[in-house]
Image (cartoon, rainbow, N blue to C red; front, side, top):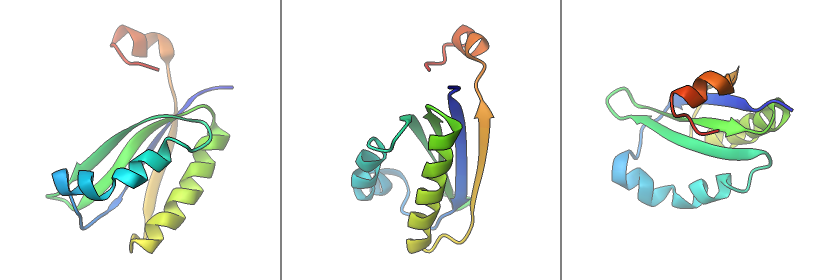
Length: 101
């Protein structure tokens, strides 16, 4: 089984920053329970009205299952299009650059 890096981004009208942290804490906690989930880095760009994240999953299967679930959840927030990409991780080079897998 090969770990997969998942990149997701989408148009988002907020909240951002500390307000996002307060309002989405339950969502953040629920992500920890997703099958195959290892970690997430939350991303946001208030100036360009974008948000998303960089995730590490145990497998392509668990990453794609999460994309399907999260895209449906985001639709309930009014997000029309979710853009995602999956990547393999080069563990050797990542380790040289202090990446934690």
